[in-house]
Length: 251
Image 1 (cartoon, rainbow, N blue to C red):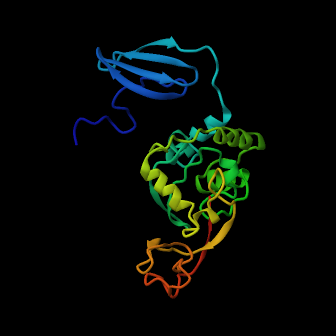
Image 2: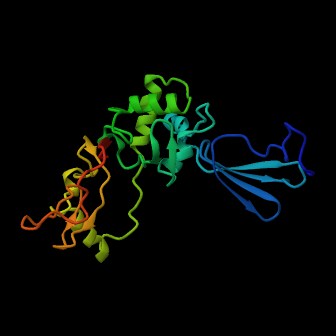
C-alpha cells in the first residue's frame, strides 16, 4: 500500500501534547482548536497542512482543576485502556462485553452516588470501593497497585459524578404508568429496588424471568412467577422448573 509513512513514523507531526485535552474541532484557515481541561486553555494550532504547526493559547481560567481521581480515571492503566474507555465522562458506553469468568456483561453507570449502592459490580461481590479498584483497575485492567490516598481520590471523584438527566419528563403519562407499575405490589419491583438509589444493597439468588401479563386475570407476573390473583391457577407462562439461580446485585 502506498502513501503510508515508514514504520514507526507519524503521518503528520505531533500537533499538541500538553495538558489534558477534552475537545477538538477544526476551524477554517487550517486551524485546529483544542480545549484543555488542565491547565484551562484553548489552544489554536495552525499550519497543520504545511507540516510546520504553530500554536497559540488562550487562557480560560487561572484556577487549577487538577484532580488525582480524575487523572487516574482517565489514565492508561498499562493494559491499553482506562476507566474512561468504558465509562466515558464517568457514565457508560452502552455496550455489552464478553468478559472471562463473567460472561456477557453490560457496562454499568457509576454516577449519581455510587457509594450508596454497595456492594459493587455485577455480582455484588465487592463490598467497598477499594476492593472494586483492586479487582478491576489492578486485576482486570493490568494497572499498578494504588495507594490508599490514590484509591480515596478516585473514590471521591467518582462519588461526585452527577447523575444523567432523565430521558423523559416526569409529567409524561407513560412515566406515570411506568411508575405505578414499578411500585405495584403485583410486580414487587420495589421489594429489591427501593429507596433513592433503587436498591436494597443486597445480593440475592436470581434466575432469569419473563415479566409478562397473566393470560387469565390480566395482572403482571414478575419475579414470583405466579398469578397475582389467589383464586386463579398459576399463569400459563410460568416455568415449572426455574433455571439455576445465581447471586446478583440489586444495584
